[in-house]
Structures are given as structure tokens and as C-alpha cells.
Length: 318
Image (tube, rainbow, N blue to C red; front, top):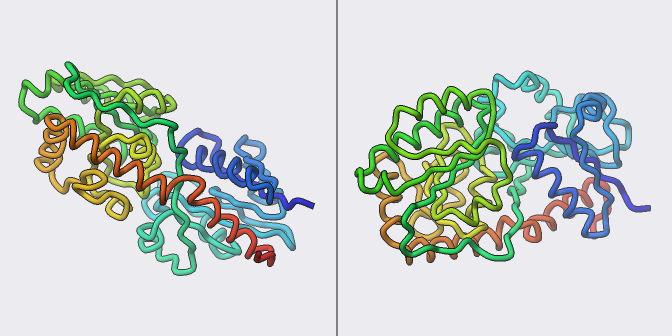
């Protein structure tokens, strides 16, 4: 009989939700596991005390599991900083009872002091073709994606707009920034941005694929993050990425080769300016970023690690 894996993620569509959906698909495609993704509120409520499956992979803080059932806790964020999450205090017990803990980066393993955790990186689909590099666009399309659920990430969008607003006027007039994402902090940031002299479009919650194909540069800024899927998706699309060195991004982006990490606002502006003026550099860095993500952060690259872990939990090493 094919063993079953139940994957529980938050009901709200965000990074963990899409990671759970894609992991379920990847495990199904191996033919070795039957994987189901649970994210409805009734299923999540039931999972806290009685999760389904031979193996349960949960982003949420499950408190009990049945005898003979294996529990794998999949931690995506810095629990110590996400105190506004009402479930955060439940993770201590989940960590104690889990058979194994998975985190997506060495950075998160270190800051959470989880020496027993296994690192399996986040993965993203690789588009069939990269974004086209426009050599002389009349308008530079810069894209960013965030969750307006967290004040630190929301403030990062405002910081990004201030950085853009500090560019010379002739560049500012050529830039159009599109912001994908929604949440309770979005109206506050929209109001703050209106006073700046740049074109900003808040498009709300949208899947980013079409926007990635239309963008020239992906810009990211956050005061708090781990390994943002939005950045990996942009790199997979062949876009040049500029970001501050938040979370695990210094382990992913090598400045000058697969993107640019800027320590200061001035360095951030310099990186953007170089990308705007040098289309060949945008193309070369975007190509290198896409290749790196395909080798290390694509689902084919990551699925074997998940299968090995699941086999070891069930004592079925192959």
C-alpha cells in the first residue's frame, strides 16, 4: 500500500501555502507517496489534535499525533520575531514532540537554535522560458512582492520606494514600480507612498508569473525575512535581483554574479542604476541566477531530499 503524507499549511495563500501545494504535487509525481495538502480551517483545527496520514508534515503547530504516526514540523519563519502570530506560543510543544524538524535555511536553523533541524531549502517552479531583457525600454518596470501581514515586511516596501525616490529625476521619471501583495498594512503604506515622486502601482494579491515575465528588475527590501520565495521565483524567471541582505539571502545571492545585495540605501541605488544602464549585465546576472536556482532550488533538485527524509522516518531507507 502506498504510504500517505498529509501536508498542513495556513489557509491564507502565501509562501508556506504554495510550498505545501507544490510539495504535495512533487511527492505525488514520484509515485512513492500519496500526498494531500490540507489548508481549510476545519482541517487545520482538527489537525492540532488529530492529524491525518502515515506521515504528517505541518507548518502549523500540531500538538498531538497518533501512536505510530510520524510528525514532521516544517518551520518557515523566525518564530521569535513573529509574536503577533497567535499560534507562535504553541510551537514549543510541537518542537518537543516532532520526530523531525525541517527549516529552509542554515540561517533559520541558527537563529532559532534548532541544532536537531534538517535543512531542506525552499523550492520554486522553473518557468519554461526566462523573462526577456529589453535593451532600451521607455519605462523601466521594477517589480516587488511582499506580504502586508507583517509590519517589518510592509515597512520594507516603503523603504524601497524612498530609495527609488532618491534616484536622479530623469531616472525616477522612467521607473514604474509594481507591488504585489495584500494585507492589513497595505493601506498605510499606500498612503505614505503617495507623497513621493515615483509611479507605484499596488496590484494586490496576484500570482506573480505574468508580472515576472513583464518586469526588467526585481527589487526586494524587508526588515525581517528568512528565504523569501518571491526572490527565488524572480531569479528562476531570469530577472536580475536587488535586495538588502536580509535573512538567508546572503547564502543565495552572490553580489555581482547572481544578483546584488546592498548594505546601504546608496549602494541599493547604485545597483539599480547599474542595472538600468547596462542591459547586458541584467541579462548575464539574470541568466546566472536562473541556472543557480534550477540547480539548487527547483523541485527536481529538492524532492530527493524530502523523499530520503520521509523514507528514514518510516524506516524504509532505499
